[in-house]
Image (cartoon, rainbow, N blue to C red; front, side, top):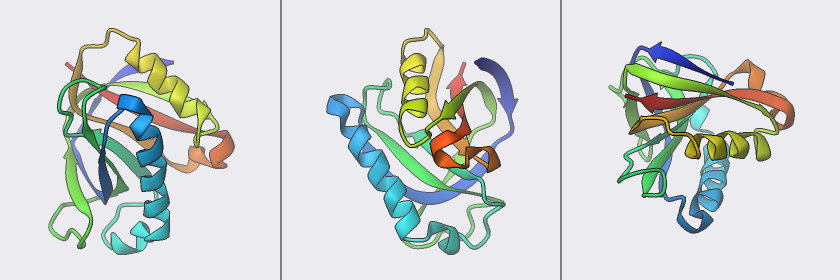
Length: 153
């Protein structure tokens, strides 16, 4: 299920890593990043966060989806005035996005299937920022729902 949406810009602060989809590298790096997000209690470090919704953003693409990019897991914040040491602040740009729904085991197959489908579409992607949103519907995480937003021209 996919639909076109227009979003306002917003800010996110969180933990981050550089990765690539080449040789399944992201399949190792992104779960490790989520583990770091939990272990380092990022939610406590981001003092000015807006709610408990978690954002997993993909940005700084060096090309298409097979090129290196940055992955950031964090929380929405009102501004980027105070970025705790070791964390990164980003702005999700306003614009058009295609919204997809991941439903099922969000730690594995459900999200993987959505991304595999996205990579096989002919969407006119911006490769600026794509992101996943994990709100109340994401739990229980092994049978939840998350929205995936892909930046499009």
